[in-house]
Image (cartoon, rainbow, N blue to C red; front, side, top):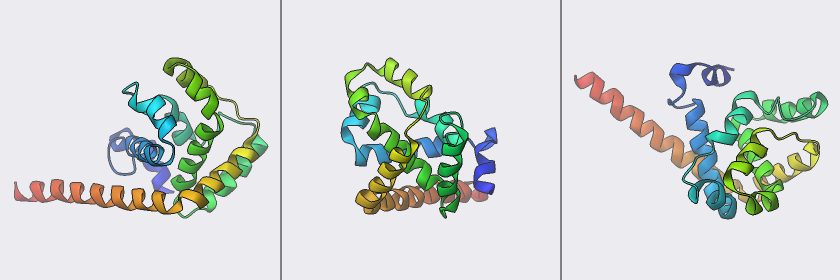
Length: 165
């Protein structure tokens, strides 16, 4: 549960495992799994997923659905070895589920809708998340491996510099 605790400590926001780290990972996954959504939401508007995904990631979707659906989702999330893995998958599934709407609307309208989304069809989105996991498993593993490896090297350089000084 330390990984969850880190999310609520401001000093960890930009560190490995902090909220900004999670947002960057979600964006990387978006860029590989659905380029249309990535281009519309992030690249074209020069924005980041922080604007709509912070509540999803920080609160494990607790404000987006009714309690029975939330408990169903949490059962899946907390059974995963890496809890955030399924949070990312579910986030991607929401975006995929709302794809037609996302591609039609302007950025600010999309972000407002995603920030205030009320999910009533959670089981369908869960199935979509499992489908994304099945079809993009290798890509996601590569992103996680590459990102974690890169982050570790960066942190090691910082530590090495501090020990020299």
